[in-house]
Image (cartoon, rainbow, N blue to C red; front, side, top):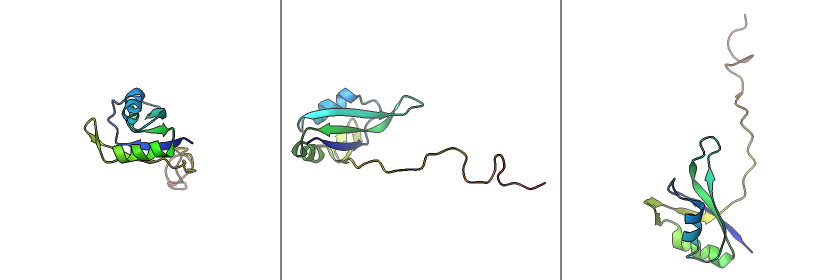
Amino acid sequence: MAKKLYVGGLPYATTDQELKEAFQQAGTVESAVIIMDKMSGRSKGFGFVEMASDEDAQRAIEMWNGKDFGGRKLTVNEARPMEDRPRNNFRGNGGGGYGGGGRNW
């Protein structure tokens, strides 16, 4: 069974292919993806690597966690499921804007 790893602290210029090649040193990589900012199209400095087995994933964590990669120190651990977060509707909760806060005339 494949195991997904979180990889933080990546240099912003790192590509998916460079990430995959680095983690192949620890075992078989199923996928490697750098997370990009939707607005700017630039890297957010983290990504996810899916290893083919639990053993490969553990080897990758031991090999890369806390190690230098392109001049930055990596954080590598097992990825956790995304938590449910409320969507930001940019309206805030009262105060300012239309109909909130201010004086009643």
